Image (tube, rainbow, N blue to C red; front, top):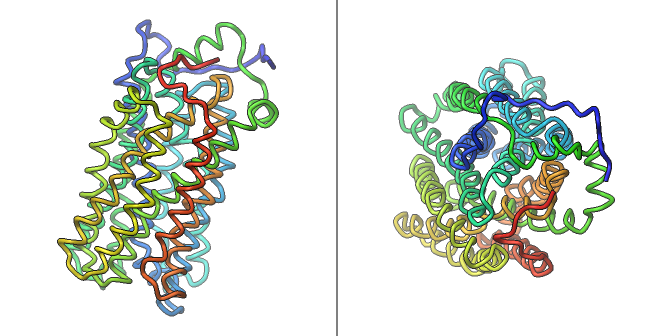
Length: 439
């Protein structure tokens, strides 16, 4: 083991002598993930509008693909952000990075809300949008994985799945809030006003959310697991190198699982919205509210699935979740295509059932694959690499498939392939549900 006797450590609540409450840790950490995914989701939900704002010279299909390509650009920076903040978190502490990432996400989100449009700045406008999205990706690369690391290290072993589910529940609440905000704005103003200035509102609303989260995170102390590393002088000097040299199998397994988790998640978060409005012709405002309700229902179910995983094992439940995707998504997309919005609403709720199962425990599984000394780095690297291949590509690939095959069911093939890859990876993983995390 590589030790660092000169490691810098910082905690925002050094005076506290009480053990960190898992309830406080999970709720406050999950708040930041909610803000992160609010920001990521709002762009995807408004992709059709942003295509008109930043790519007005293109035809509607080319403009939409360009907007989705900008969406994907944020994922390019996520592994770099994961490496940077993972190394920082594994050397200086979890609480330090949890504050740094949420500040960065808030600043960039505010900048997106005041960007000039193509009509105002020409080609400079989409260039600035890409730069902002890449900056968001950099900070986001350390946010959710850092929150998940922190929660897993503060939760008792027999309830790690339950408390770990608060982080993805925060993610889902952020997505639901984004969908609700997009629905509210689109309801209150005309489509023309939405293109002219209304798209800015959801981005700017992120700023007070960031302020509340920052206030809460400033009160956190470091996790007991990390404190024990500091006290025993076992903090690793080069966590990235150690992940690659000693935990390659864990890295490969986590990337494979993260690929499918992101692929199936962004099918629901981003693509289904485009599918129902652009491909199937449902009213935009209604679809926004449907996505908000579906995601919120999934968020409320996640702690229950996390608790179930503490009893039956996360490996078993995750395999069930991914197998459900293979069955449920084709059925849901078929029901959506029948032209009945009530039936499409039922189909959307059905599609978010495997989403709730998989997301509830994915982050906890990543934490269990790596020891404390490299947990943040290992999680951040693997999840964000998986996010590039699964999250960044899925809205683009699904849109391209439907446009070029003429088959509205074709995205189900892509997500089924991703689910199979994860099932294979999970079959090779050792389940450590209920066991203490290793240092």
